[in-house]
Image (tube, rainbow, N blue to C red; front, top):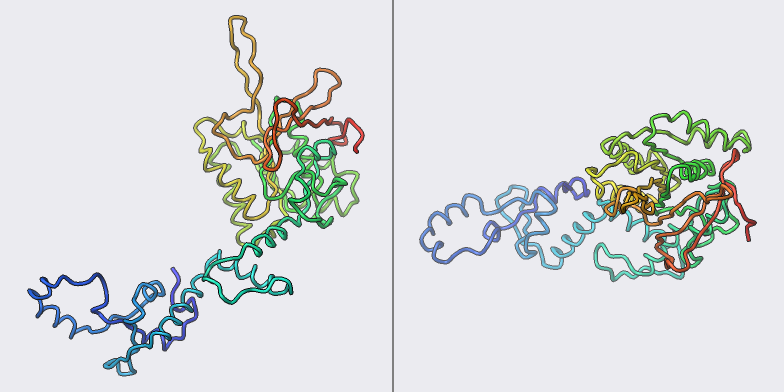
Length: 400
């Protein structure tokens, strides 16, 4: 809880600031005052003033009840109402400034002051932010490029309309798409679902291999992480030696066998981002595979909220891979159409892609099933195609 010392109030002021005892609490009952007049008078004489010990206590008192006692502590004088209101305003501003949201507002206002076309109005209610500042902050947050999947077709499938972001800097990704608005977006949770062998983990590793100067956490429900590390090393083999070293040293693999280990890992990641140990937003978080780690008893809502919070608050690109399920139905025992695992209560993803291997040709077909900036139609679905070889995820059609 904030104190007068933490908001840097002058020591002499905070020790001499008091309020009248009669002004504390609810109004007295006249009948009880008549019956117990002697007791009340004695109490007031013994302790006529009540010290104000916290900023919250100061804000809860009526400005007219605030007083300043002298150095002897025997006399007091009231604080003029304009001065009392100014004191309460300064304390309120200090409390806001010490909070996390207050620090965010301060940074936004400081950046806005540097822009001649965005003057900050002095007539501002404490703790508010203007619409223009919010839009400018959103534009600054969108200045981070997307991460490529290695396939132009798949990148276009995941793309946002150009009005959703501004031109990014190209220092953070390798082999990114010619369209800076396509690919895996920062600040969102992207999920790839599909049956085994459709290339979900290959896409996740390809995204991890295409990062430069970016911290990457790769959480896997598969305990054999050595194979993932070897595959990542193979994918970056054609990069310059310095880039290979940067990608491999910035990627951390962690095995998460159940929801408890997953939540513990996410808590550590969030702590490192919050403390500044890892510089956000230049980060990628991969969760491969959700269906191998979670079950029907897992706290889906808690995990989903944590993943989205990490993505939104720290502008982290979150990639999830999920398996598929199908059930036998009818007298002939035919399998139903496969669908994403974990059921309808798993709602972590902002963008959902369904992937499956084509019956001929060995290529993977992807269908967009959810996107925050695109209309999804079952009659004319948006699709993408790619194939996987030793070099990683590749296009099956010329990029346009």
